[in-house]
Image (tube, rainbow, N blue to C red; front, side):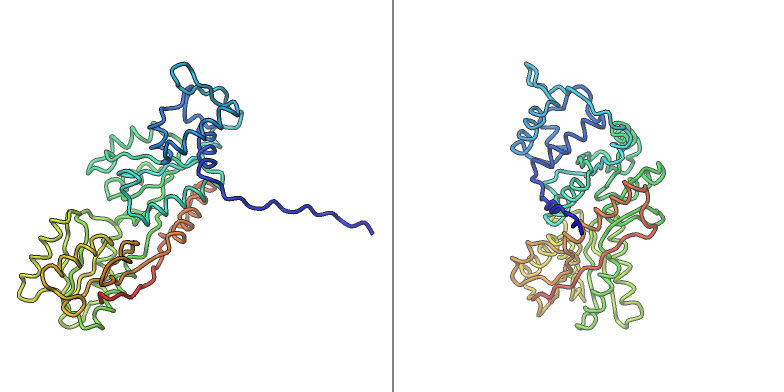
Length: 362
């Protein structure tokens, strides 16, 4: 009997960042994103979110493969184009729209973005980062229309989108995934932490610890996740005798947040617990309370709704809720790939429940 020969399967490989950059540039050339010449190195570094130290070897690799040539002025001319269907390639181009620099993101979000880029690139997608704060104004329609027209055929991942921006994308019926929570009344694919369940759990926990006056610290901007946070906390304490919630909305500056805390401390019955949105703001709250002579947790409790490695260095350690960034990135990548293949994701928003991490502040 003749035996069947089996070849050894090819081992999976982890692509280096240079290799991922080569693939992104290659796909961008194939799908016609750049015409005749590539942009300058600074623009490419911003778009692909890599350093020049990573970009230059990738460009040299494309030159060796005959896709680029350098003119006398050091402009890189595109030499050839693939015969693949342009539209099919464009369907795999993922644009990530952000209000600010990659370096300004919280470390956990930076990790999510880096992991997401690796997963999508390995799946054959081109990932391009776009920083455009003008898209994040109260009336972004004109700027968004021009911006999207300049980048046709993309699947969009949008970070930190408030209601006006979400409504525009919803009206245009563009293929878009909100990295965060949709605003009330807006039905869009989104992936976020389950802030309602998180703050519902926090409310019950603080109640059991004897806290009746709780301050909820949030940004001034109205984000879907912050709305869900307030609703979750109120639902947890609804009907509880003596329960009082005070919402403090700050402008993200340390000085304004400290002013709001000082105002609370001057009340006849100040809050005995602070539930804080944003890990760095939780650290600010804790430090300012101690500066004002409040002992943590003997006099007051601080609980962070979000996690960040910086909280590991705090003393006393800050209790918080933490979701694994790799888990979050994997779930986003899965939703994006589904969007790329079918232009749809499940109608229900994707919400992930973080784990409670105990600390000395509670």
